[in-house]
Length: 86
Image (cartoon, rainbow, N blue to C red; front, side, top):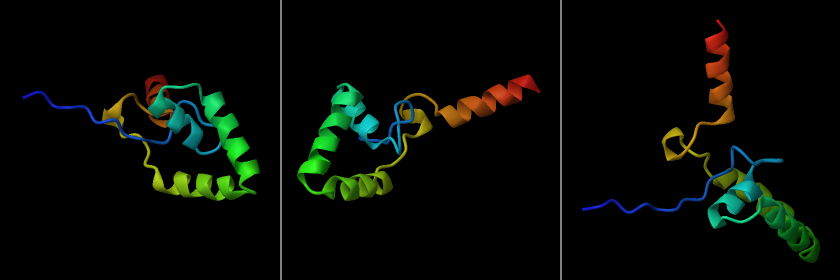
C-alpha cells in the first residue's frame, strides 16, 4: 500500500529573515514569501500589534525541518564544507 505524504508546516531554513515563520508558511502554501510577509505586516498593523505576539508564538511552536524531510540545513552544509577543506 503506498504511503501518503503528509504536508507539514516547518520553519524555513532557506528563506528566513528573522525566525523563518513567514518563509515556512510560504513554502507550505507554495506562494511567494514576500506576499506572506506583506500580509503579516498588514495583519500586525490592523490588529494593533497582535501579529508580533503571533509571530513569537509561531517561532517557538513550529519545528525545524528534519534532515530527512527535504534538504539539509545551511548549518550542516557549512559543516560539510569545513570538513572538506581539512
